[in-house]
Image (tube, rainbow, N blue to C red; front, side):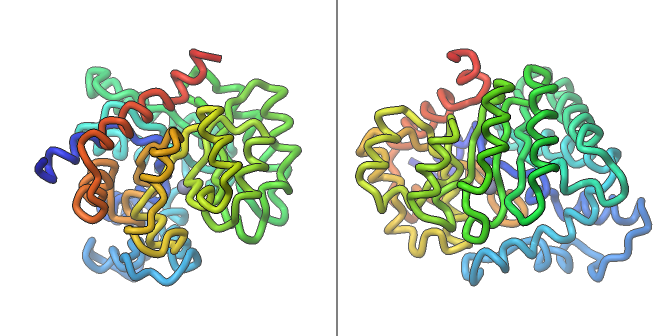
Amino acid sequence: MSIKGMEGYGKIDLHLHLDGSLSAGTILRLAEKDGVKLAAKTEEELLPYITVSRDCRDLNEYLRCFEIPLMILQTAENLFAAAYELGRELRKKGLVYAEIRFAPQLHGRLGTTQEEAVQAVLAGIHKAMEESGDKICLRAILCCMRGEDTHEANLETVRTAAGYLGKGVVAADLAGAEGLYPTGDFAEEFTLARDLGVPVTIHAGEADGPKSIWKALEFGAARIGHGVRAIEDEELMRELAARGIPLEMCPTSNLQTKAAERIVDYPLREYLRRGIKVTVNSDNMTVSDTWAGNEFALLSKEYGLTEAEAELLYRNAEEAEFDRIAGRA
Ligand SMILES: [Zn+2]
């Protein structure tokens, strides 16, 4: 099958960060509007600051690419524009469903509250959906952050997610430096999520090992972000398969952050063989310079992904949409 044909399987993106998907053009336009001075004046000059290549050294280099987007995304107006333009871009690429995630607590440097940030993003995705004639369905996931001092803000994020469930928000997440701040430190957040009936996905098994994924399951995660390192634990793989827990895998990003060293060793096929519900996603369209369709094309070209496998991955993604998970609950 042609590469273009394989791109067609990338119609659903379940793991997509708003800040890491802010395009160079949008950054330049919003910076100019706000009088923010950037070292770069053109898209070409800006790209090295916001995009990594495959030879990215580690997660730290990867995370530096979020500095400029986050600097720009500090007002409700800009969050609205970012969400709207991302939604429009996804539709242009042929997507029919995407869950866009962001951490409301990272957008308050100028006083924007978490709730204002959420309202702005929801308004942006709503406008993009409306303009598409509802050809694309967009939803939001609110990320809690790993960190020293994030618990209060995280609890507010979970409460905000509960308040906007069914109004565009579909779940809460936990993002940030997994290696430094283990999943187990965030029990309070997920107890609250359970009490408030907020579905949960958790970044786990990316920088940290299987125990992080076990913790995420214990915390009630309905899906796992990445899950690359589940391959190290037979019992965990059996558990993921038996419970039908979808993994939101992001091949390009995993190679860039070195969660996976070489694409030939990528555990995706082994997971499929064991009946784990793997899905393929982009993570960050700008930072990783990719999109869902491109991930399928990459897997086809460099991993020998077959059409049958691509179809299975696509069906898994359909079943893993939080809209559907919530419908089954
Ligand atoms: Zn992520």
